Length: 478
Image 1: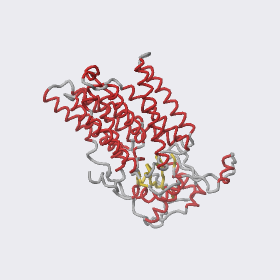
Image 2: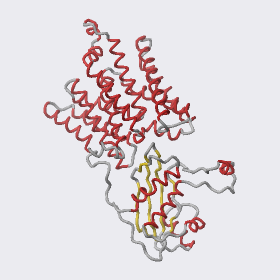
Image 3: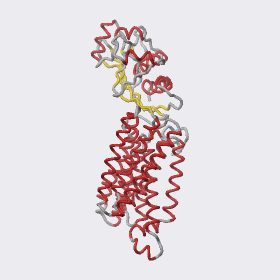
Image 4: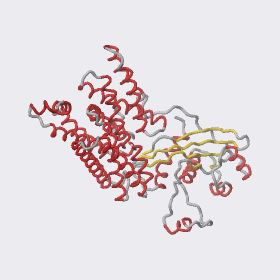
């Protein structure tokens, strides 16, 4: 725990920020569930996401590109959330149509608007990933300060006016008889709900917000004997689910947001089963649900199992680093410094030289890192002149290498992930060393540790800064 709270810990912002969103949503979610406003919890996060996407489209920027854009996106999230909430409440009070009609229409319109704003944005692919999946690793230190202030701003009114909020929510007629205005306290509750959703979507995405608005609250209401216990149990389940889900996502190299929501769903199902029990067995079941939700986080996020070390260098046998295969789904092309050099290629000139890519830079860096470790390397120009494209499999690589006269081991690489957030690179690079004569795989390694890139701005700078840690993760024994 001391490592998590350390400013130097790579996942500090993601863990603390996501935990803040989970706690905030879990407390607000109890009111949403008890007042049967769960559908509002579906529509409002989507409206908030539409506001964020609209600001990114208007400014031409994306998540993590300066405090000014980030502040405008948060403002857009707040405005669209409160506008949508005000419209839903007004329509509900007029009671001209069922509330579900307006909520369904809002969800459809907000979903379509979000996708269209993202599609029109030049950085739409990045924003689609960030908004819909929730990129927790993009949370900055300033976001943590905002989340901390939001927790205080929401926690203080909840504590000071908890009795009035509950009374006006569930017995408004009696509240009026003791001089409590239900409209005023409803406005306070809606303000807390709207602010929590808008802030949560900006930092963690609509999926995470909706999941933690509903699932911990549902689980807590199955287990709690009273409302006070429901709030406490909901917060505990949210915290345990988030920490356990984050640890699982890290070890399985999966998006953290959906995994955390999945763990919360497991806790809800376990709580529903535990609700059938009575007395002491029910209390024991509550503890088991909380423990199961957080058990995945016990091994931690900072270690991995042991891997085989590179074989020792063999004199006279130079390693040929073949072109790396790109399986990310993104071309990862690197533009020229002078834009007119890219014009012939953009116009379809078949004689234009191909653009360099991130896998190309990684292959070059792999040769440098191998040379630093004492291995003899075939000159990269000679390799590229003989083999210009990544081989489909080790057998093909061995055949092409023998035809080109390479008798030493071959280094094959497959890039499966290369995602850049604000200050962290998420990468997955699989490597293998193949003997071309026997076609035997001599060694396999993998780089999948997130790499901090606080100062890098372009793809070449990112590869330059992250290359050393990437290949230290792949080549060196752990």
